[in-house]
Image (cartoon, rainbow, N blue to C red; front, side):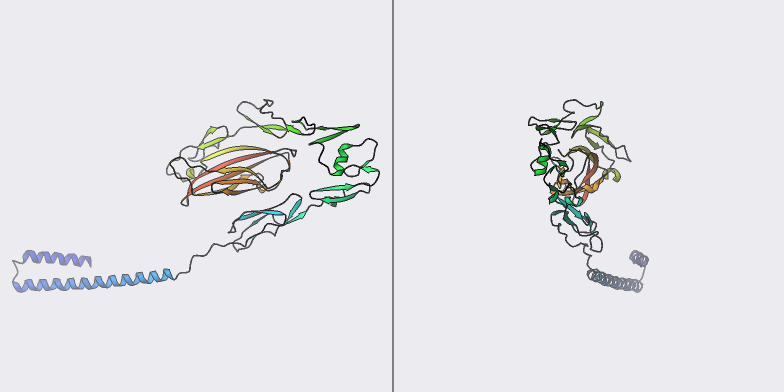
Length: 387
């Protein structure tokens, strides 16, 4: 033991110090005793090293023969339905795939499917079916309905006219109905008003009739200062009107607080070095307001989110985009459009008037380590009109 070694070393020192006091036989006996002790210590040390080597070899063999890491579970690839489109390219657990149909077709089955831990998808296979406008028997007075893509046409018997054969033929030709009947381009962008011997077009409130006599153009109340937004509010022009908005930064939470750097931008104040919650709070929050017409053809990109590195500093090598909030998330998907850009895409058309909010984020990573998160809050003002 260590104590024995110390004791014998002390003895050797004592023997050396007293060698002049011992006779020759006594001194040789002490030296032989120390040599035997050192030989025993050397043998025990060599045995300990051998045992340790054997244990390390056994541990190495058990680790080498251990089962390999389990592979990530994935689900089989999904195809877009005929006359439809698919959004999403990853098939691992908890990833979502979204589906939508072309105009004139209706989606049956599941519009969103999620990869499960057992390697199967939730929901049912989606299909796109032609929307039949004739099922409701819109043609009156013996008219014959002919289906088209997202439309129908009534062939009226003699003596009847109108889009649904609802009017008896008159001496004055109702141009508004005739053009609808024949499937020609619409005479007016909004409303057609029949007048004796002719017709005229009208536009809804908030629009003006253009010089061609049929097209409507939105009146920019904000640009013309025809709004009543109070001081501190910002006027946002919308289809047929306007909205007064005011972007507010989040209240302080923990060590995270924000300062408004522009009317539609908030930046996080510097965080304490030891505050993990503060560093994971959004570094910036931006506000965006988008006016949209009703029944916009989908899919349509609405908003792009990108990263940019500061001069002299390395930018992120990986980005993650996602939808993290809102009141109608099922109408949107967020997907990457290139290495540094993500797109918010409208995949289901919206019918106005309504206001929809959606919140998206972009997380930056460098060498698989989280760096920062940026949030964009988007408000969509959907007009009641399709123009």
